[in-house]
Image 1: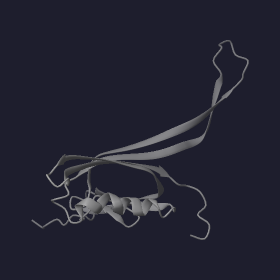
Image 2 (image 1 turned 120 degrees about the horizontal axis):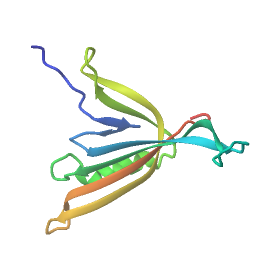
Image 3 (image 1 turned 90 degrees about the vertical axis):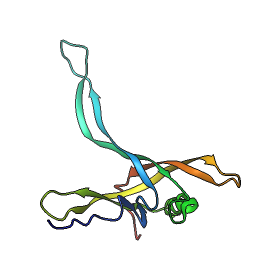
Image 4 (image 1 turned 60 degrees about the vertical axis):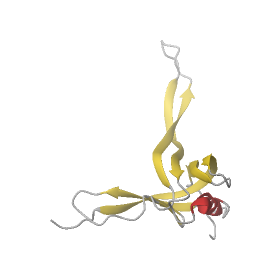
Length: 150
């Protein structure tokens, strides 16, 4: 049986790679809103007619945990994420997923996204104040606008 080589990261946002050796996420939630406009109509019922006017905001929320003593630059991983956010530009998001017959680890480009927020909670402190666990959450919003000359 052939050995299957998987990608060494779970997802990439800009230059930052989410992985077991950096910051692994345990929860990934996609949200999509759909826009409907109420139109007045003369019907026997009082409910307005609805017209679909397009896809609304698309967001992605992920939650994860970093164990600083187990990963390289463990205490700096959220700083690396924040560095991506402070660029002030939309970032390409790619997601690794399993594909049945072709290459075992296939990247799926999810388009351009912006970082809306990064939250962190440090717990289980050692005597010197270094946490043994850092929980984080990140909220992204899909960017479909014009990037200009960037």
